[in-house]
Image 1 (cartoon, helix red, strand yellow):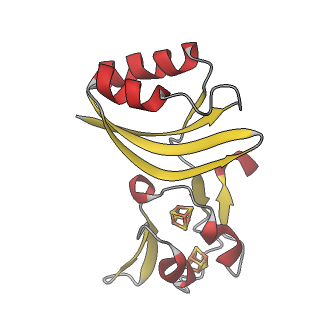
Image 2 (spheres, protein in one colour):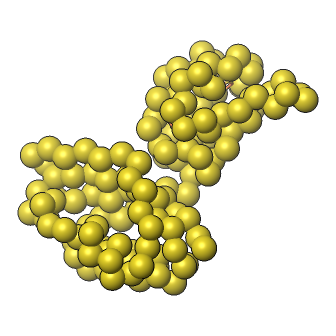
Length: 136
Ligand code: SF4
Ligand code: SF4
């Protein structure tokens, strides 16, 4: 089984269609919605798909053919360990426990697989050690 995270962007014309429902049903995937936003410009859906790699690949193709912009979130956040002071602020703010204190070294670790790409930690880090990957 594979788990992959994606950001799906829908334009207003297709935002009301049951595209994600069909994707789950037709490709036998488990879906975990991490974040959803909809407004007059369309919709943005951040989700994790769990299933076989091939089925996920087929589902992504189906989404793209349906007019959905699909961006895989392989790595949303980058933590610069040379700037990090291990203050722990990110641990308290992260809703998905993607930061953890290593009790042996007292260093803050970033666990990418837990990140739901909410962006809350970026401004919370006093020395600016956390950046969006796209800001690199
Ligand atoms: S908030 Fe920034 S400086 Fe503090 S532990 Fe997290 S990454 Fe390091
Ligand atoms: S972007 Fe959100 S979920 Fe990801 S590490 Fe930062 S606070 Fe946690």
